[in-house]
Length: 81
Image 1 (cartoon, rainbow, N blue to C red):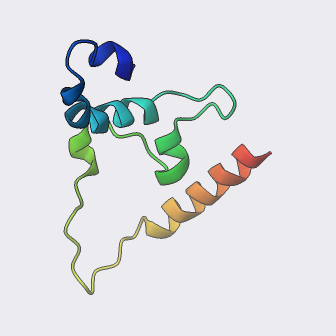
Image 2 (image 1 turned 90 degrees about the vertical axis):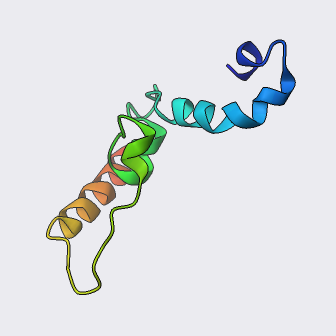
Image 3 (image 1 turned 180 degrees about the vertical axis):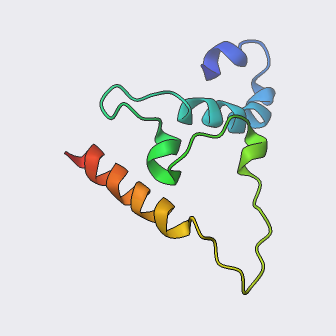
């Protein structure tokens, strides 16, 4: 993919590398049937804007945090099998 995008101007590579990595991590792996990003984080972002951190207050607990943690652990267990 990188070779196709930088065919005439190799200096463009640095600017395109992060976009190519994002695209690569969105491809479903044939072995795991999940994307690389989903295996690590438990969801697939639609755009790079979905990756921006959400501000969290110090004393506020996320009610879905424990559910998300168990979901990712189960996903990892399923992929290891």
